[in-house]
Image (cartoon, rainbow, N blue to C red; front, side):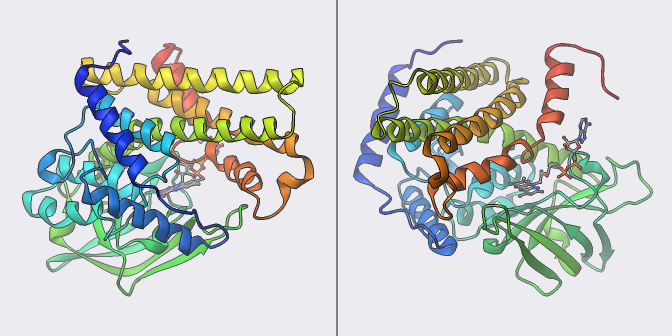
Length: 379
Ligand SMILES: Cc1cc2nc3c(=O)[nH]c(=O)nc-3n(C[C@H](O)[C@H](O)[C@H](O)COP(=O)(O)OP(=O)(O)OC[C@H]3O[C@@H](n4cnc5c(N)ncnc54)[C@H](O)[C@@H]3O)c2cc1C
């Protein structure tokens, strides 16, 4: 692992630091989900104007052609500045790279630019009521009809669907084929009859995700991505990008939150309490370990061209640490941490989902056991 920045990386970091200092995101709206989303969307537009909405994208698609280390620097500087993650996070981190890998020239021309500018928001229609960890068990059907497809089925936990123009949809197109082989990956227009978005209100009170009821929605042939029957491979590209991309932004957010918690503790004169100091010290250690593990993962990708199993380890330890951090905040603040609308109440409640979203902790532990430790396979 090499943690020394090159001259180019140092120059990039300085450029970003100056940009974030000159471009403050403004007051973060609280208590109004739509206003909060609009605030993030507006900030992404400003990033896009200066070519910073997706630094890891190649320059021909509006990115900076940043290396993985430079992308990590971007997320660290974004975190340091307190700016929000791009509103179109699933578009930037998942849909865009999947379209770049599998899309034809027309698809790249049509979809990539509005992802960057946050003009068209994307959601991920993978999970179903009976297909989460075992994604290939999905039942949503797409049937060929003339020069397009008719889709029927249900998706669930679809984050951001209420703001989305497009959905990365995986559907079964050949029910006779083995389960991983009969799938196709579609780019589905959400703005049509036949697609109903029903908000699911979470424990935090927000409808961050939704149910999608799809009843006779139409998708033209030109919106198949990567070929009919090839959906599993295309979906794996999306999932690999999910872990690799989120790994860095998650640990940066953790650092922001821990700094805020240390400030809260200091404000209450609690830093001298040895028990509190011990727990904060432990969280600091875990956060630093995560940062270094994220760098180790990047170094492996840069050297060998493949993401290693660090992504699973990172996601597992991050969710564990974030939940511990939110619990410590609740312990520190007492009943006020549970006041509706309070930042820490939100963090406490929201962190419960961390060990489910993007791969459950049990599934990640299986991956670490089998692929890192070489233990016998569970199945
Ligand atoms: C906040 C949040 C946002 C989300 N956003 C999206 C989104 O935008 N798009 C989308 O498609 N999905 C989204 N999801 C869904 C998420 O990907 C699934 O919840 C996750 O994959 C788990 O699937 P499941 O809920 O069906 O649980 P299941 O897969 O049914 O798992 C149930 C339990 O069984 C355990 N389990 C399952 N298989 C194994 C195994 N092999 N070994 C050991 N234990 C096992 C699990 O760990 C879990 O405890 C989101 C989820 C959350 C919480």
